Length: 521
Ligand SMILES: *[C@@H]1O[C@H](CO)[C@@H](O)[C@H](O)[C@H]1NC(C)=O
Ligand SMILES: *[C@@H]1O[C@H](CO)[C@@H](O)[C@H](O)[C@H]1NC(C)=O
Ligand SMILES: *[C@@H]1O[C@H](CO)[C@@H](O)[C@H](O)[C@H]1NC(C)=O
Ligand SMILES: *[C@@H]1O[C@H](CO)[C@@H](O)[C@H](O)[C@H]1NC(C)=O
Ligand SMILES: *[C@@H]1O[C@H](CO)[C@@H](O)[C@H](O)[C@H]1NC(C)=O
Ligand SMILES: *[C@@H]1O[C@H](CO)[C@@H](O)[C@H](O)[C@H]1NC(C)=O
Ligand SMILES: *[C@@H]1O[C@H](CO)[C@@H](O)[C@H](O)[C@H]1NC(C)=O
Ligand SMILES: *[C@@H]1O[C@H](CO)[C@@H](O)[C@H](O)[C@H]1NC(C)=O
Ligand SMILES: *[C@@H]1O[C@H](CO)[C@@H](O)[C@H](O)[C@H]1NC(C)=O
Image (cartoon, rainbow, N blue to C red):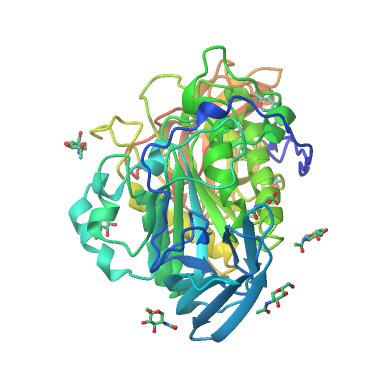
């Protein structure tokens, strides 16, 4: 008999490429949307300053990692940096090379506030950043569903009213900028700030990211120490724009003929990610994939996992090995867009998991996934591709972070996933899940492919009825197809498989939906 589902997945092992594409192209590519690059200083020396993304009110990565701080010094004289706060006072000395100084602080426990002052030998001027906290830094990337702001939530006014209750969750936003070459520094859209309703609800797709903010706020409730949120995302952009040339080459993807603007390969990696490599961070969350549903879709199972690997390697070395080389990476699996249309979303959802169906997995270690296909929003004013139910997506992400990034035991963060399909019964498949489930009968959530050959995404599939059976099992009636010819099985393989929080299979507490899968029997 055929017992286990054999998944189509191929494990690639970990991709670690170190080749660099050193060529420089047209330098005129960068056009900052807004000139907000000056950090706020108490007293700004003309020459001596911090890099753009260090500012008063910021969060630096807490112990055991060591935070990296860097900036510019006009002259060659050594730069002295003083850190003063609850854990005492530390003085660091950095030389200035090519106009840049850089200090790796000793580990500092979560808390604050600290002041960080830099002076340059032989000069009386100094620059101070006040109210600096130590905590965990999370980078929030992706396209419009990450850019979707707190103001766009269904209960925006209630959520905005919460802002002032979380002064230890600090926000920072990178301005939209693209470049043909890897940049050292970036342009600031929102400097490090204590959250306010005005900053969180500035407009539509501006600032601040609802998923990023809610994730940070939920995490703070559990961790009870400062969280720094760095938003760096741009609507409508494909994964290639956020990927270095190493990933582009490894996966063999090319720009389409008419690519221009922020959808071109590497241009956002260059301007909006590369400059951040030198800062120590805890992890990243990501909401993207819609722009790849009709663009290099079949390569997304390479580009996305490879981008994660490449970011990890690059952030690790950029921070002098302080950011973990396998830092936790969470992502939202695509929600819904079109009813009854083939729009590529099922394939992207699958490829988001490197074709495993769940995360973390062997190919994508130390990742976590928020399933969102049960959160459709036909009435969204910004189109159904932008569902407003970001609380659920962020909450599910937060559960994943607690389990994967913080190693909290006993946190349920993954929906039910099948561990076996029993084909012994002549009329019914018996599907066994890895946990207790809450299941409801469905006529059309499962499909089988009746064929002597393995089936692909576009083969001829037939809807088959499903009935709940035991605490961990459901049965599927195969109908006319002889059991020996049932070659493949798939679940929730449409753009819009169910109504709001009404998919047929959830975790026993009904918090986590079963993710979609496709497998050969
Ligand atoms: C930080 O600087 C502010 C403003 O000068 C001062 O009021 C505060 O006492 C300083 N804090 C520490 C820990 O030095
Ligand atoms: C900083 O380092 C330089 C070069 O090593 C040294 O000459 C200078 O005395 C140091 N300054 C302090 C205050 O330690
Ligand atoms: C907003 O609504 C969501 C449900 O969509 C709920 O989880 C959340 O608690 C609400 N927020 C506030 C501040 O009331
Ligand atoms: C945001 O979008 C909504 C819905 O389309 C619209 O009513 C509102 O005016 C927009 N707000 C801004 C600031 O553009
Ligand atoms: C990615 O998916 C495509 C089909 O969309 C498949 O042909 C290919 O083998 C998969 N690659 C990997 C690395 O899983
Ligand atoms: C940032 O890190 C990169 C990669 O390690 C390095 O080449 C670059 O010099 C660093 N920049 C600064 C300002 O420290
Ligand atoms: C980071 O680790 C690599 C290899 O483990 C080592 O060669 C390099 O010197 C380390 N860098 C720093 C700044 O410690
Ligand atoms: C499949 O189901 C049959 C009938 O219930 C049972 O005898 C058999 O042990 C099952 N196979 C496995 C691998 O669980
Ligand atoms: C096959 O499974 C169905 C549904 O659970 C059950 O009614 C039927 O008795 C089973 N048939 C055999 C031969 O076990």
